[in-house]
Image 1 (cartoon, helix red, strand yellow):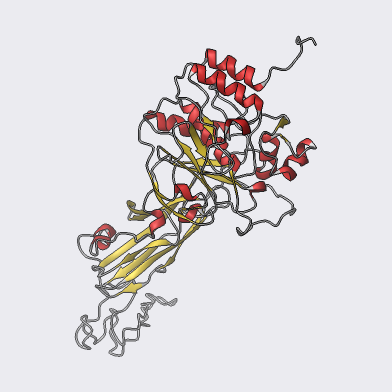
Image 2 (cartoon, helix red, strand yellow; image 1 turned 180 degrees about the horizontal axis):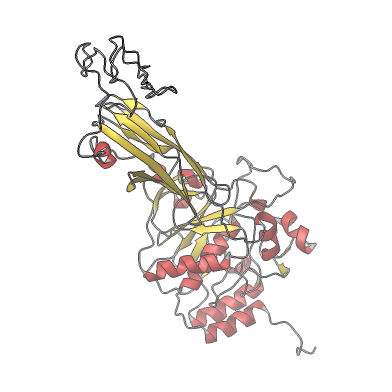
Amino acid sequence: MSTKNRRPSSSERIATLAVTGSLALVPTLAFSAGPHELAPADERPATWDMSIEALRAQGLGQYRGDPVPVPADAPRLRPAGAPVLAQPGVIFVNFDGAQLSSGFDDSRNNQTQIGNLAGTFAPYGEGEKRIAVLQAVAVDWAAYDVTVTQTRPASGNYTMNMTGPTNPFGGGVLGIAPLDCDDSQTHNNITYAFHSANDMFSAAITATTIGQEVAHSYGLEHVDEPNDIMNPYNAGGDPTFIDNCIAVIQGGQCGAQHQEHCGSPVSQNAHRELLTLFGPGIPDTSVPVVSITSPTDGQEFPAGADFDIVVTAADTDSGIEQVQLFNNGEALQSDTSEPYGWPVGNAPSGPYEMYVEATDLAGNVAMSNTITIYVGVSAPGADGGGEGSGGVDAGNDDDGTEGNTDGDTDGDTDGSSDADADGDGGGCGCRSAPPSHGPLSLLALLSVIGVVRRRDSRHAAH
Protein backbone atom coordinates (compact mmCIF):
# COMPACT_ATOMS: atom_id res chain seq x y z
CA MET A 1 0.00 0.00 0.00
CA SER A 2 1.28 3.41 -0.92
CA THR A 3 2.02 5.70 2.01
CA LYS A 4 2.55 8.86 -0.01
CA ASN A 5 -0.77 10.46 1.00
CA ARG A 6 -1.25 8.63 4.28
CA ARG A 7 -1.91 10.86 7.32
CA PRO A 8 0.87 10.26 9.89
CA SER A 9 -0.21 8.42 13.00
CA SER A 10 -0.24 10.04 16.41
CA SER A 11 2.87 8.10 17.41
CA GLU A 12 4.77 9.20 14.31
CA ARG A 13 3.88 12.86 14.76
CA ILE A 14 4.76 12.80 18.45
CA ALA A 15 8.02 10.98 17.78
CA THR A 16 8.95 13.68 15.26
CA LEU A 17 8.15 16.38 17.78
CA ALA A 18 10.22 14.53 20.35
CA VAL A 19 13.27 14.80 18.12
CA THR A 20 12.77 18.51 17.48
CA GLY A 21 11.44 19.46 20.93
CA SER A 22 13.61 21.48 23.25
CA LEU A 23 12.26 20.42 26.66
CA ALA A 24 13.98 17.81 28.77
CA LEU A 25 11.18 16.07 30.66
CA VAL A 26 10.84 13.09 32.95
CA PRO A 27 9.54 9.67 31.76
CA THR A 28 5.82 9.20 31.13
CA LEU A 29 3.27 7.52 33.37
CA ALA A 30 -0.01 6.63 31.69
CA PHE A 31 -3.08 7.46 33.75
CA SER A 32 -6.21 5.38 34.23
CA ALA A 33 -9.82 6.48 33.91
CA GLY A 34 -9.99 6.68 37.68
CA PRO A 35 -7.90 9.01 39.86
CA HIS A 36 -6.09 6.35 41.86
CA GLU A 37 -4.15 3.96 39.60
CA LEU A 38 -2.02 3.99 36.47
CA ALA A 39 -3.31 2.05 33.48
CA PRO A 40 -1.37 -1.16 32.76
CA ALA A 41 0.50 -1.16 29.46
CA ASP A 42 -1.73 -3.86 27.98
CA GLU A 43 -4.81 -1.65 28.50
CA ARG A 44 -3.48 1.33 26.57
CA PRO A 45 -4.25 1.78 22.85
CA ALA A 46 -1.45 0.52 20.62
CA THR A 47 -0.75 3.96 19.18
CA TRP A 48 -0.19 5.27 22.67
CA ASP A 49 2.28 2.49 23.48
CA MET A 50 4.25 3.35 20.38
CA SER A 51 4.28 7.05 21.20
CA ILE A 52 5.18 6.40 24.82
CA GLU A 53 8.22 4.39 23.80
CA ALA A 54 9.29 7.04 21.33
CA LEU A 55 8.78 9.85 23.76
CA ARG A 56 10.51 8.06 26.61
CA ALA A 57 13.55 7.72 24.42
CA GLN A 58 13.59 11.50 24.01
CA GLY A 59 12.57 12.47 27.55
CA LEU A 60 9.13 13.80 26.48
CA GLY A 61 5.59 12.58 26.86
CA GLN A 62 4.18 13.55 30.24
CA TYR A 63 0.53 12.57 30.44
CA ARG A 64 -2.48 14.71 31.24
CA GLY A 65 -4.62 12.40 33.33
CA ASP A 66 -7.87 10.85 32.18
CA PRO A 67 -10.78 12.96 33.41
CA VAL A 68 -12.87 11.63 36.28
CA PRO A 69 -16.58 11.35 35.36
CA VAL A 70 -19.01 13.28 37.51
CA PRO A 71 -20.67 10.89 40.02
CA ALA A 72 -24.08 9.67 38.92
CA ASP A 73 -25.71 11.01 42.08
CA ALA A 74 -24.28 14.52 41.71
CA PRO A 75 -26.82 17.34 41.42
CA ARG A 76 -27.36 18.48 37.84
CA LEU A 77 -27.54 22.03 36.60
CA ARG A 78 -29.07 20.90 33.30
CA PRO A 79 -31.13 17.71 32.84
CA ALA A 80 -29.82 15.14 30.36
CA GLY A 81 -30.90 16.00 26.85
CA ALA A 82 -31.85 19.58 27.69
CA PRO A 83 -30.82 22.14 25.05
CA VAL A 84 -27.52 23.97 25.56
CA LEU A 85 -27.78 27.75 25.37
CA ALA A 86 -24.52 29.65 24.92
CA GLN A 87 -23.63 31.83 27.88
CA PRO A 88 -20.42 33.60 28.96
CA GLY A 89 -17.92 31.61 31.02
CA VAL A 90 -15.18 32.46 33.50
CA ILE A 91 -11.92 30.59 34.10
CA PHE A 92 -10.21 31.44 37.38
CA VAL A 93 -6.57 30.31 37.30
CA ASN A 94 -5.77 29.98 41.00
CA PHE A 95 -1.99 30.36 41.34
CA ASP A 96 -2.19 31.12 45.06
CA GLY A 97 -3.15 27.76 46.53
CA ALA A 98 -6.14 26.83 48.69
CA GLN A 99 -7.42 24.51 51.37
CA LEU A 100 -9.78 22.10 49.59
CA SER A 101 -12.49 19.86 51.01
CA SER A 102 -14.19 16.78 49.55
CA GLY A 103 -17.67 16.88 48.04
CA PHE A 104 -19.46 17.59 44.79
CA ASP A 105 -17.54 20.22 42.83
CA ASP A 106 -18.07 23.83 43.94
CA SER A 107 -15.24 26.24 43.17
CA ARG A 108 -16.89 28.97 45.23
CA ASN A 109 -16.50 26.84 48.35
CA ASN A 110 -13.16 25.16 47.46
CA GLN A 111 -14.95 21.81 47.32
CA THR A 112 -13.64 19.08 44.99
CA GLN A 113 -15.06 15.78 43.82
CA ILE A 114 -11.53 14.40 43.25
CA GLY A 115 -10.81 13.21 46.77
CA ASN A 116 -7.07 12.78 46.18
CA LEU A 117 -6.75 16.56 46.01
CA ALA A 118 -8.66 17.38 49.20
CA GLY A 119 -6.36 19.17 51.64
CA THR A 120 -3.74 21.84 51.12
CA PHE A 121 -2.91 22.74 47.53
CA ALA A 122 0.38 24.64 47.29
CA PRO A 123 0.76 27.92 45.35
CA TYR A 124 2.39 28.09 41.93
CA GLY A 125 4.86 30.86 42.75
CA GLU A 126 5.52 34.37 41.52
CA GLY A 127 7.43 35.89 38.62
CA GLU A 128 7.30 36.61 34.91
CA LYS A 129 6.51 33.01 34.01
CA ARG A 130 3.27 33.19 35.97
CA ILE A 131 2.24 36.27 33.99
CA ALA A 132 3.18 34.55 30.73
CA VAL A 133 1.10 31.49 31.65
CA LEU A 134 -2.00 33.59 32.26
CA GLN A 135 -1.49 35.42 28.96
CA ALA A 136 -1.09 32.12 27.12
CA VAL A 137 -4.30 30.75 28.63
CA ALA A 138 -6.13 33.92 27.57
CA VAL A 139 -4.87 33.49 24.01
CA ASP A 140 -6.01 29.83 23.92
CA TRP A 141 -9.54 30.85 24.93
CA ALA A 142 -9.79 34.16 23.04
CA ALA A 143 -12.10 32.72 20.37
CA TYR A 144 -14.83 32.07 22.96
CA ASP A 145 -16.90 34.28 25.23
CA VAL A 146 -14.82 33.26 28.23
CA THR A 147 -13.04 35.55 30.68
CA VAL A 148 -9.67 34.35 32.01
CA THR A 149 -8.56 35.80 35.34
CA GLN A 150 -6.15 35.12 38.19
CA THR A 151 -8.42 36.95 40.65
CA ARG A 152 -11.16 34.96 42.31
CA PRO A 153 -14.48 36.37 41.06
CA ALA A 154 -16.50 38.04 43.80
CA SER A 155 -19.77 36.74 42.36
CA GLY A 156 -21.22 34.49 39.68
CA ASN A 157 -20.16 31.09 38.39
CA TYR A 158 -16.60 30.16 37.47
CA THR A 159 -14.42 27.16 36.72
CA MET A 160 -11.33 27.14 38.92
CA ASN A 161 -8.05 25.61 37.83
CA MET A 162 -5.72 24.97 40.75
CA THR A 163 -2.28 25.57 39.23
CA GLY A 164 0.55 24.51 41.51
CA PRO A 165 3.03 21.74 42.38
CA THR A 166 0.78 19.62 44.65
CA ASN A 167 0.56 16.31 42.78
CA PRO A 168 -0.53 13.04 44.43
CA PHE A 169 -0.24 11.13 41.14
CA GLY A 170 3.49 11.35 40.37
CA GLY A 171 5.67 13.56 38.22
CA GLY A 172 4.60 11.97 34.93
CA VAL A 173 1.05 13.27 35.30
CA LEU A 174 0.54 16.96 34.49
CA GLY A 175 -3.09 17.45 35.42
CA ILE A 176 -6.54 16.04 36.08
CA ALA A 177 -10.15 17.21 36.04
CA PRO A 178 -13.76 16.09 36.37
CA LEU A 179 -15.56 15.20 33.14
CA ASP A 180 -18.79 17.22 33.09
CA CYS A 181 -20.61 16.51 29.82
CA ASP A 182 -22.15 19.67 28.32
CA ASP A 183 -21.07 21.50 31.49
CA SER A 184 -24.31 20.12 32.94
CA GLN A 185 -23.43 19.29 36.54
CA THR A 186 -22.17 22.70 37.59
CA HIS A 187 -20.52 25.81 36.18
CA ASN A 188 -18.25 25.72 39.23
CA ASN A 189 -15.97 22.73 38.68
CA ILE A 190 -12.43 22.54 40.07
CA THR A 191 -9.65 21.32 37.74
CA TYR A 192 -5.90 20.87 38.28
CA ALA A 193 -2.61 21.63 36.52
CA PHE A 194 0.46 20.24 38.31
CA HIS A 195 3.01 22.93 37.49
CA SER A 196 5.15 25.45 39.36
CA ALA A 197 7.05 28.63 38.58
CA ASN A 198 10.32 26.70 38.94
CA ASP A 199 9.53 23.66 36.81
CA MET A 200 10.99 22.88 33.39
CA PHE A 201 7.81 23.52 31.43
CA SER A 202 7.25 26.56 29.24
CA ALA A 203 4.33 28.94 29.71
CA ALA A 204 2.70 27.50 26.57
CA ILE A 205 2.85 23.92 27.86
CA THR A 206 1.51 24.95 31.25
CA ALA A 207 -1.32 26.84 29.52
CA THR A 208 -2.10 23.74 27.46
CA THR A 209 -2.44 21.68 30.64
CA ILE A 210 -4.72 24.32 32.17
CA GLY A 211 -6.80 24.56 28.99
CA GLN A 212 -7.22 20.81 28.63
CA GLU A 213 -8.23 20.25 32.24
CA VAL A 214 -10.71 23.12 32.17
CA ALA A 215 -12.16 21.84 28.88
CA HIS A 216 -12.71 18.39 30.46
CA SER A 217 -15.07 20.12 32.88
CA TYR A 218 -17.06 21.23 29.81
CA GLY A 219 -17.32 17.68 28.42
CA LEU A 220 -14.34 17.64 26.03
CA GLU A 221 -12.34 14.41 25.94
CA HIS A 222 -8.89 13.29 24.79
CA VAL A 223 -8.25 13.14 21.05
CA ASP A 224 -5.55 11.55 18.88
CA GLU A 225 -3.96 14.80 17.65
CA PRO A 226 -0.81 16.36 19.21
CA ASN A 227 -1.66 19.79 17.80
CA ASP A 228 -5.00 19.87 19.63
CA ILE A 229 -5.11 21.02 23.25
CA MET A 230 -7.13 17.90 24.05
CA ASN A 231 -4.28 15.51 23.13
CA PRO A 232 -3.34 13.71 26.38
CA TYR A 233 0.42 13.72 25.89
CA ASN A 234 2.81 16.63 26.19
CA ALA A 235 4.28 16.82 22.70
CA GLY A 236 5.67 20.33 23.05
CA GLY A 237 4.68 23.19 20.79
CA ASP A 238 1.63 25.39 21.34
CA PRO A 239 -1.57 23.44 20.56
CA THR A 240 -5.00 25.00 19.98
CA PHE A 241 -8.63 23.86 20.00
CA ILE A 242 -8.80 22.60 16.39
CA ASP A 243 -11.87 23.20 14.21
CA ASN A 244 -11.95 19.66 12.88
CA CYS A 245 -13.53 16.36 13.84
CA ILE A 246 -10.88 14.17 15.49
CA ALA A 247 -11.19 10.67 16.91
CA VAL A 248 -11.78 10.48 20.65
CA ILE A 249 -9.44 8.05 22.41
CA GLN A 250 -10.32 6.03 25.50
CA GLY A 251 -13.59 7.88 25.86
CA GLY A 252 -16.80 8.80 24.13
CA GLN A 253 -18.58 9.24 27.46
CA CYS A 254 -19.86 12.65 26.34
CA GLY A 255 -20.94 11.28 22.98
CA ALA A 256 -24.14 13.28 22.71
CA GLN A 257 -22.33 16.62 22.53
CA HIS A 258 -19.77 15.19 20.06
CA GLN A 259 -22.55 13.80 17.86
CA GLU A 260 -24.02 17.25 17.28
CA HIS A 261 -20.96 18.53 15.42
CA CYS A 262 -19.31 15.40 14.05
CA GLY A 263 -22.17 12.97 13.53
CA SER A 264 -20.42 10.45 15.74
CA PRO A 265 -20.19 9.98 19.52
CA VAL A 266 -16.50 9.12 19.25
CA SER A 267 -15.34 12.04 17.11
CA GLN A 268 -14.88 15.51 18.60
CA ASN A 269 -14.60 19.06 17.27
CA ALA A 270 -13.31 20.94 20.32
CA HIS A 271 -13.63 24.38 18.74
CA ARG A 272 -17.27 23.93 17.71
CA GLU A 273 -18.27 22.43 21.04
CA LEU A 274 -16.81 25.39 22.94
CA LEU A 275 -18.60 27.83 20.63
CA THR A 276 -21.86 26.02 21.39
CA LEU A 277 -21.30 26.31 25.12
CA PHE A 278 -20.04 29.90 25.29
CA GLY A 279 -20.53 31.64 21.96
CA PRO A 280 -17.81 33.59 20.13
CA GLY A 281 -15.40 35.83 21.97
CA ILE A 282 -16.50 39.46 22.09
CA PRO A 283 -14.91 42.39 23.95
CA ASP A 284 -16.52 43.07 27.30
CA THR A 285 -17.11 46.82 27.37
CA SER A 286 -20.14 46.84 29.66
CA VAL A 287 -19.61 48.48 33.03
CA PRO A 288 -20.97 46.95 36.25
CA VAL A 289 -24.01 48.28 38.08
CA VAL A 290 -23.20 49.41 41.63
CA SER A 291 -24.86 51.42 44.39
CA ILE A 292 -24.60 52.18 48.10
CA THR A 293 -27.89 51.03 49.63
CA SER A 294 -27.09 51.88 53.25
CA PRO A 295 -26.62 54.40 54.80
CA THR A 296 -28.80 56.73 52.76
CA ASP A 297 -27.76 60.16 51.59
CA GLY A 298 -28.12 62.71 54.37
CA GLN A 299 -28.57 60.14 57.13
CA GLU A 300 -27.47 61.24 60.60
CA PHE A 301 -25.92 59.16 63.36
CA PRO A 302 -24.97 60.01 66.94
CA ALA A 303 -21.27 60.14 67.75
CA GLY A 304 -19.98 56.68 68.55
CA ALA A 305 -22.68 54.94 66.50
CA ASP A 306 -22.32 51.50 64.93
CA PHE A 307 -23.61 50.95 61.40
CA ASP A 308 -22.92 49.02 58.19
CA ILE A 309 -21.95 50.36 54.79
CA VAL A 310 -23.91 48.11 52.41
CA VAL A 311 -23.22 47.93 48.67
CA THR A 312 -24.89 46.06 45.82
CA ALA A 313 -22.91 45.33 42.66
CA ALA A 314 -23.53 43.14 39.62
CA ASP A 315 -22.02 42.49 36.20
CA THR A 316 -23.80 40.35 33.63
CA ASP A 317 -20.80 39.70 31.38
CA SER A 318 -17.74 38.62 33.34
CA GLY A 319 -18.55 39.17 37.01
CA ILE A 320 -17.31 41.51 39.72
CA GLU A 321 -13.63 41.55 40.68
CA GLN A 322 -13.90 44.00 43.58
CA VAL A 323 -15.65 47.05 45.00
CA GLN A 324 -13.53 49.89 46.41
CA LEU A 325 -14.72 52.37 49.03
CA PHE A 326 -13.85 56.06 48.72
CA ASN A 327 -14.25 58.95 51.17
CA ASN A 328 -13.72 62.48 49.88
CA GLY A 329 -11.96 60.95 46.87
CA GLU A 330 -9.56 58.93 49.03
CA ALA A 331 -9.47 55.18 48.27
CA LEU A 332 -9.97 53.16 51.42
CA GLN A 333 -10.83 49.48 51.71
CA SER A 334 -11.86 47.01 49.01
CA ASP A 335 -14.19 44.03 49.16
CA THR A 336 -13.87 41.05 46.82
CA SER A 337 -16.87 38.87 47.67
CA GLU A 338 -20.57 39.11 48.29
CA PRO A 339 -22.20 40.49 50.33
CA TYR A 340 -20.29 43.71 49.71
CA GLY A 341 -19.80 46.19 52.51
CA TRP A 342 -17.98 47.17 55.67
CA PRO A 343 -19.01 47.31 59.34
CA VAL A 344 -18.28 50.56 61.19
CA GLY A 345 -18.20 50.87 64.96
CA ASN A 346 -17.78 53.68 67.48
CA ALA A 347 -17.88 56.23 64.67
CA PRO A 348 -16.21 59.58 65.48
CA SER A 349 -18.00 62.84 64.76
CA GLY A 350 -17.87 64.42 61.34
CA PRO A 351 -19.49 64.52 57.91
CA TYR A 352 -18.44 61.80 55.43
CA GLU A 353 -18.89 61.88 51.66
CA MET A 354 -18.68 58.35 50.27
CA TYR A 355 -18.95 56.45 47.02
CA VAL A 356 -17.72 53.10 45.74
CA GLU A 357 -16.25 51.92 42.48
CA ALA A 358 -16.94 48.43 41.13
CA THR A 359 -14.46 46.75 38.78
CA ASP A 360 -15.39 43.73 36.67
CA LEU A 361 -13.06 40.96 35.55
CA ALA A 362 -12.53 42.67 32.20
CA GLY A 363 -11.32 45.84 33.92
CA ASN A 364 -14.43 47.95 33.36
CA VAL A 365 -15.08 50.37 36.24
CA ALA A 366 -18.36 51.92 37.39
CA MET A 367 -18.94 54.54 40.10
CA SER A 368 -21.87 54.36 42.51
CA ASN A 369 -24.10 57.11 43.82
CA THR A 370 -22.41 59.51 46.23
CA ILE A 371 -23.83 59.83 49.73
CA THR A 372 -22.99 62.15 52.60
CA ILE A 373 -23.64 61.04 56.17
CA TYR A 374 -23.34 63.04 59.37
CA VAL A 375 -21.99 61.54 62.58
CA GLY A 376 -22.48 63.63 65.73
CA VAL A 377 -23.28 66.72 63.61
CA SER A 378 -26.40 67.87 61.83
CA ALA A 379 -26.80 68.01 58.09
CA PRO A 380 -26.73 71.55 56.61
CA GLY A 381 -30.19 73.06 56.97
CA ALA A 382 -31.14 70.75 59.84
CA ASP A 383 -32.35 72.39 63.10
CA GLY A 384 -31.04 71.09 66.38
CA GLY A 385 -33.73 72.91 68.40
CA GLY A 386 -37.32 72.39 69.40
CA GLU A 387 -38.02 68.70 69.72
CA GLY A 388 -35.03 67.78 67.54
CA SER A 389 -37.30 67.30 64.54
CA GLY A 390 -34.75 68.59 62.06
CA GLY A 391 -36.92 71.43 60.74
CA VAL A 392 -35.70 73.41 57.74
CA ASP A 393 -35.20 77.18 57.63
CA ALA A 394 -37.10 78.28 54.55
CA GLY A 395 -35.08 81.50 54.15
CA ASN A 396 -36.82 84.40 52.36
CA ASP A 397 -40.48 84.13 51.46
CA ASP A 398 -41.71 85.04 48.01
CA ASP A 399 -42.68 88.51 49.21
CA GLY A 400 -39.10 89.28 50.22
CA THR A 401 -39.68 88.95 53.96
CA GLU A 402 -37.76 86.45 55.97
CA GLY A 403 -39.94 83.54 56.99
CA ASN A 404 -39.52 81.43 60.06
CA THR A 405 -40.70 77.88 59.41
CA ASP A 406 -38.32 76.03 61.65
CA GLY A 407 -40.77 75.68 64.51
CA ASP A 408 -39.47 78.60 66.63
CA THR A 409 -41.98 80.04 69.08
CA ASP A 410 -40.01 82.99 70.37
CA GLY A 411 -40.41 85.17 67.29
CA ASP A 412 -36.70 85.16 66.46
CA THR A 413 -35.77 85.63 62.83
CA ASP A 414 -32.26 84.19 63.02
CA GLY A 415 -33.39 80.59 63.05
CA SER A 416 -32.63 80.19 66.78
CA SER A 417 -34.86 78.63 69.42
CA ASP A 418 -34.84 78.27 73.12
CA ALA A 419 -33.32 74.80 72.84
CA ASP A 420 -29.78 74.33 74.05
CA ALA A 421 -27.29 73.09 71.47
CA ASP A 422 -26.42 70.22 73.76
CA GLY A 423 -30.01 69.04 73.66
CA ASP A 424 -30.98 69.91 77.28
CA GLY A 425 -33.79 72.27 76.25
CA GLY A 426 -32.09 75.60 77.00
CA GLY A 427 -29.85 78.08 75.20
CA CYS A 428 -29.16 78.38 71.48
CA GLY A 429 -30.32 75.69 69.04
CA CYS A 430 -28.17 76.90 66.14
CA ARG A 431 -27.48 74.19 63.58
CA SER A 432 -24.12 72.52 63.98
CA ALA A 433 -21.30 73.53 61.69
CA PRO A 434 -18.74 71.05 60.31
CA PRO A 435 -15.60 70.80 62.40
CA SER A 436 -13.00 73.44 61.60
CA HIS A 437 -10.53 70.84 60.34
CA GLY A 438 -12.93 69.74 57.60
CA PRO A 439 -14.42 66.27 57.05
CA LEU A 440 -12.72 63.57 59.05
CA SER A 441 -11.18 60.84 56.93
CA LEU A 442 -13.36 57.76 56.86
CA LEU A 443 -10.15 55.81 57.20
CA ALA A 444 -10.00 57.04 60.79
CA LEU A 445 -13.62 56.02 61.23
CA LEU A 446 -12.99 52.52 59.94
CA SER A 447 -9.76 52.14 61.89
CA VAL A 448 -11.53 52.87 65.17
CA ILE A 449 -12.51 49.23 65.31
CA GLY A 450 -9.58 48.03 63.21
CA VAL A 451 -12.16 46.78 60.77
CA VAL A 452 -11.17 43.64 58.90
CA ARG A 453 -13.72 42.25 56.51
CA ARG A 454 -14.72 38.88 57.91
CA ARG A 455 -14.62 36.09 55.35
CA ASP A 456 -15.56 32.47 55.47
CA SER A 457 -12.77 29.99 54.87
CA ARG A 458 -13.30 29.61 51.13
CA HIS A 459 -11.80 33.07 50.49
CA ALA A 460 -8.86 32.82 52.84
CA ALA A 461 -6.40 31.63 50.22
CA HIS A 462 -6.78 34.16 47.45
